[in-house]
Length: 379
Image 1 (spheres, rainbow, N blue to C red):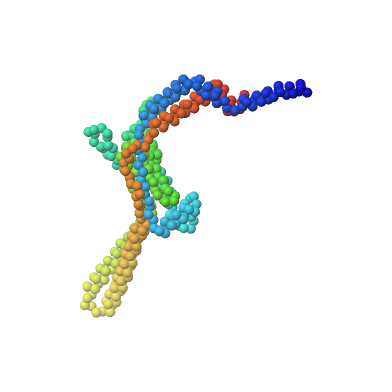
Image 2: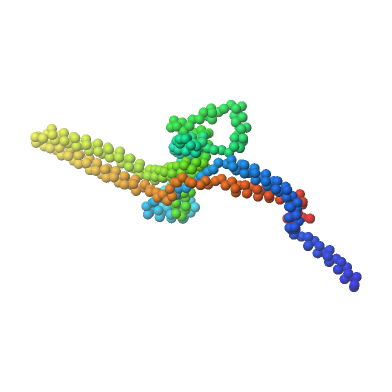
């Protein structure tokens, strides 16, 4: 019996030994990390310096925000809000809602047609140098020739430029056609025009609040004055686009009514001249045939007059319809030249990359010292 108790006592620490070694040994992890502290300092210092140099080359950019709210009539506003609440598409069958509802405004701003319409907007560039006068150019020319780029962009583009010297040049790419009225073709844009349109798509953003229908337009640019000018111009272009769309049918009806009005007016004036001429020529004639002809001309004149007045009332109604369909916009926040830059945040970039360097060195230390086995439960 005493031998069995002795054997059990000898076997008990052997069974508990693996349980004491399980889990993370924080002391060992910290000790291994301190063992390579010079490597930590070296890698993190180099990373911080490199990222700081690269971040300093990034150009500053500014943001300008404009907010406006479209004012609709009571019935249309209720129908629009109801249709938006019926589904994700924002349309409810049977209401006859218009095709261009507020949720599609961001898609309009991102369309190529809208972006190309911004090419001709004049922008004034002010130089920080004393004695240099500000100069005015188009937004297309400004984005093409006056954008600051980091120095490494030229280094990356150098091999492609060397290849361009060797390979045959494309005639369309070699000649800058610009954006003149005779060279800008929406159906077939050049490579540079397409690239500038994509740049505008990245700089100009539009958002619509689903609940309040407030339209938020945000423009990003390296020049604060250009940023504010473009924000205000995008707002005007969007308002004009929405107004033209919503009043297109009413304006078409008005144009057609004006054509009918001119025709009715011409027929009435012809009938009036014919009646006056006949009456003057047969003033003293008392023949029954003459009197009957005069009555017929008088009836024709009355018919043309009634038609003329009816069409005139239709023109007035069409003009009132255009005014009714024209949306009004309330500017909640106007465009203003930003004072402080929006980015880039160079300090955050340096801290983030330095922290990533710290994690990379730590992973290397754990791999070198076999500490990773603690995390995966390997012996």
